[in-house]
Length: 357
Image 1: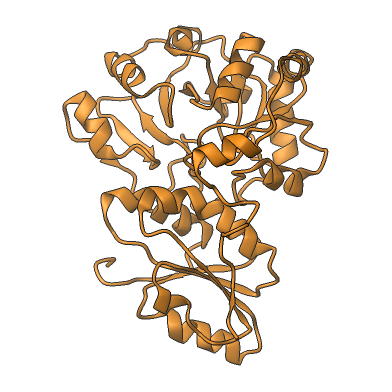
Image 2: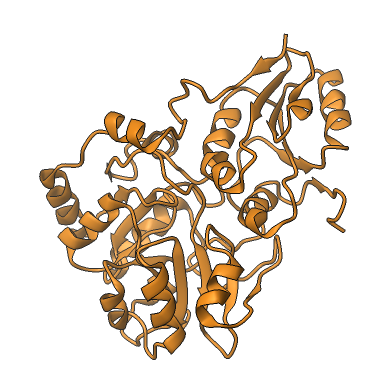
């Protein structure tokens, strides 16, 4: 009998908003005060955003920022995103600020958009990875907003995971990864979007998407009144957070295959005596009639798939599988962020499908 891993009754499941609100513990004013005091003291705090959970520290404190790098095992030249409370705080971190930044901020902040801008001279180099640019965004999650208000300054925060590993979309993922090492964790329930923010560089003459996310090139271009270029899948852009070619990866090897190639690859895994885990987009891709196959049937909508992606990979990663396989999503604009994350997670282990050449 085929083992399936349905999300029904799964604690990682991202259910309807009203159901989440009923289940989530409330973050109290005392919690926020304690978190702000920790940040003041140069310590780290994990907090939820609408994209993923972040490992935060005082962005103006170089020693606190270096602690983030130590906990994550993150290369020192890999910049961090500074989270700010609102568009009005942008001038404290960036200079000069191009007109496009104000237009995009007014339209998409708070929200899943990170802007790469020229940084002010006094910004700690630990935040920027030694560069003269800075990544800034205003998160939309109410807990993140409340923390920023309580702290009163910018918070540098990458995803709350070991460098290169799967991003956390629940507090449970964070605790599973770090235990007590990351410090205080503010509970915010499952992340609403589930993949990291869209990163847009406004350094230079042409705006460029360095990392795809929930906001598409079309949406960005509509605000700016021009077509926006984007980084291709797997492209290495060192100036942007989360841009390594191998990133967001489970511990178990992952391969991305077209629906045509997936069955044969899974059957070879079974014959080798190994257990396979599958992220399937279609019922047929997960139907193998073997107790050595664990299948999660993913949503058919890109935004819903993105919301479930990391939780699904976390679950398969701890299920005892020897190899993981994902059915390749469609090559359309709304799927670019999902395809990017899967492409980085599989470390190049990918079999092209029709239209991928």
